[in-house]
Structures are given as C-alpha cells and as structure tokens.
Length: 171
Image (cartoon, rainbow, N blue to C red; front, side, top):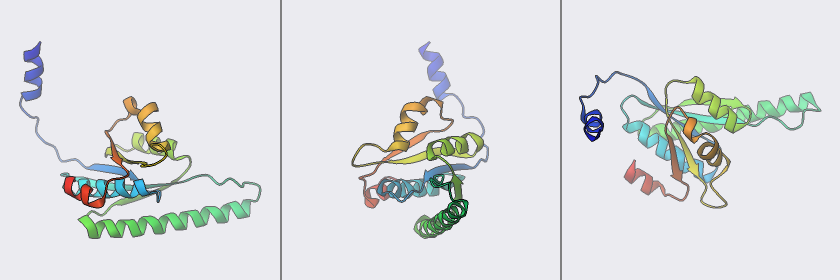
C-alpha cells in the first residue's frame, strides 16, 4: 500500500496545460482585508497564469419604504465601490504589475462570494484576512466552519496583524 501512495506522489507529471489561475480577494475597507489584498496581489504576480479578482459586495438597502431614496443609496454605493476598486487596482498594478479584474455585486457577502466561486472555473483560491481583534470575522467564520470542506478551491487565511514587510518577504 505504501508503494502505491509513493508512486502516485512521485509518478510522472502530467503535461502542464495553460490555464488561468486567479485569486479572489474581498475588498471591504477593513484592515485585515488590506493585508489579504496585498498578499493576494503578490502571490498572483508569482503564479504562472496568475490573476487577481477584487470582489466587493454591496449589502442590500435596508430602507425599502422610499424607492427613490433606496435607488439613490444603491447608485451611491455602486459609485463608491467602483471608485474604491479603481483606486485599489491602480495601487496594486504599481505595486506588483498585476491588473486585477474588478467585481461588484449586491447581496449578502457570504452567499455572493460562494455563488461567484461556484460559477467561475478560473478561481484558484479565496484569500481572506483574519481579524486581529474581536474574532476572525464573519466571512472567515462562515468559510472555515460551514463551507471549508465544500469549497472548490483552496482557502488562504492571512493574519490581519501581519505587516506589509512580512507579506512582501513571504509572498
């Protein structure tokens, strides 16, 4: 039995096919997301065929009584998200040369991220920052407890207290 496992591990490599492998990272403005974004960008720059997807989720509006107000709030949220991702993409391109894809969706972040990963076949990994104070954060909690064994890609958890220097040294 041990020989079979060894043969599988050390057997000949299959031909490497060209494929796109993108890291998905959540941009939400939190300090831990900043660290996760830096790590994901640096790793994407080092992965053959690597890319980066900046993902921002706008939570559904809570005030549905006034449709005109809700519509205006939604427009402002999309404008703010578009500007945030544009600025982030420019900084990341200057940092490591990666030109990230920008995705903005509306809904509950946990569900929207899960749906996005299931729909996209080019997602190589989900990168989340772990909060340094007050627990890991709702996304980390959700993906590590409820979905960890069912994700179609690796989950990278980046400690939120890491410095950019530490990330640059290891990425």
